[in-house]
Structure formats: structure tokens, C-alpha cells
Image (cartoon, rainbow, N blue to C red):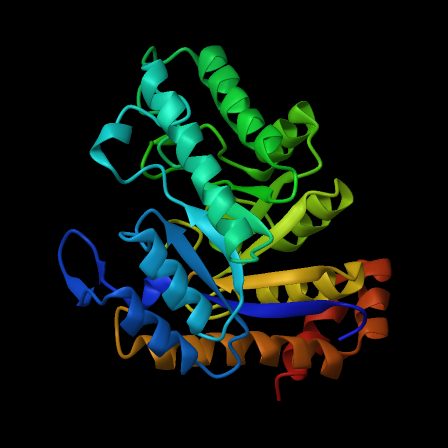
Length: 322
């Protein structure tokens, strides 16, 4: 498609245990088994790994990852799940815990460099608040900015890509939407700090994913994209396009239109069936969305945008499915 060159990455963690409060949908699997399963996914070109979860023994994990035959698209830094982060990571009231979060960020950056990965992606979900009068908003922002700044200064050869989300685990996350994520990037001013746009998070934030892609790209901050889907009410991590088909097609159209080159990583849960089959379908669906853009025609889509008449647009779009 056009000038865009997107590559397909699978989040290795999604080949392992998947559960909610009521059910366990997939059993726990060790890193070696999850890497083997990922290698069987049709069309996979890279992997996303999680620190610290995927590195119980750093040396052994690095060797397994290097031997799997797939490049690492990003190291995903998890500074939310451990008990010590319950009151915040980069924004903990305890300065020692804030320092621990920064230390974990630096370790993840070192791992990214060791694995020849271009970036660390981090969704700061434990940063935020649940109630009014619970936190000092200005202090939280300053602590978050300082923590990310320390990482950005630590090494400029690894990018830090900040993933936003409106809520979970906090009722109100500090980086709750694209606007705040871009504002932080611009405030910090580091070339190696940008944004991970997760389509599902954008939908829950009542955003239009394709518009967010364009804004982040315009700011020079679109580092990474997570693809999935939901009903705009909760982050269900469903198959891309299974609910919001035209948002997927429009997002792929604009990535191509922008000439964006980078990784599409798939954050898709498997509550029914086999994770390998689920990821096979995920990549196939995204490639089909690219083919649909070709079938409709980029010039025709440009014409529809210029005209701005939805009746004409959607009559043509729906007939293109026949």
C-alpha cells in the first residue's frame, strides 16, 4: 500500500495466561513455549516482550528471545502489577518507589538495546487517581515528567513510547488520552519520547483512531501502534475490525497516506479457542483491511474526504464489501 511499510508484531504475553475475575481462559505458559507458539503465527514479523515478567532470569530470557528468530519490536515496561506500585509508580508519594520505577525504565531500555529493539513502550496505568481530593495533580504530573525525563536522558539510542488509556487500574489515568500524552511529549522536548496509540484505548477515550494517528504523526511522536477492537465502553482487546470495521480501514488508509513506517503490535485476547489461531486471524484481518483500501481506491477515498458527503461515501464503502 502506497509508501507505508508496516510490520506485524505479536505480544508474546498473550500466548500465556489470560483471565478475568471470573474465568481463566488460557493457562500459564513459560517463555519458551510462548515464543514457540508465536513463531507459528502466520505473517508474524516480530515480537513484543514484557519486563519484568518475561525476564525472571535475564540471561536465560535474552538467550531464548535471541534464538527465536524474530526481532523485538519493543520491550513493554510493566510498572503497575507489583504490589509496591499500588499507590503509583512514577507518581508514588514515596520517592524511593519513584526511583524504583525509573530504575526499571532504565533496565528496560538496556534490554531493548541488548535485543536490538528500537524502543520501550509503557502504559502508565497505575498513574492517576480514583477519588476527588486523593492526589495532588500538579505533583503527580511533575513526578511523571521527571521520571520519564530521567529515562530519556539515560540513553538517547532507545525510544520511550508512552501508551495512554482513560482508566484501569486507576479510575482516572493521568495519561488518559492522546492530547495529554502529546502534551507531555512536547513539554519534555526529547526526540526519543513519543506515543503508542492503542486503537482500543482510543475507542474507549471516545477518540477517532485515524484522527489520533494523524495528530501524533504531525507532532512527530507516533512511535508505535497497538491494534485491537472493542465496543467503545471497555478495553476488551477483541479482533481488529470485529466491531469497528470502518475505523480499522480508515486507520490503515491514513497510515498509508502518511507514509508511516513502523510496527503494528497486536494486543488481542483469546477467550475462546487457540491463541495461535486468534493471532493468525488478527494479522489476516489487518492485511485484508489494507487490501480493502486498495479495492476501494485511495483516489476515491481522497475524493470522498474532499466532498464530505457521508451518503455517497458509505453507499460506496458498503457495496465494496460485496
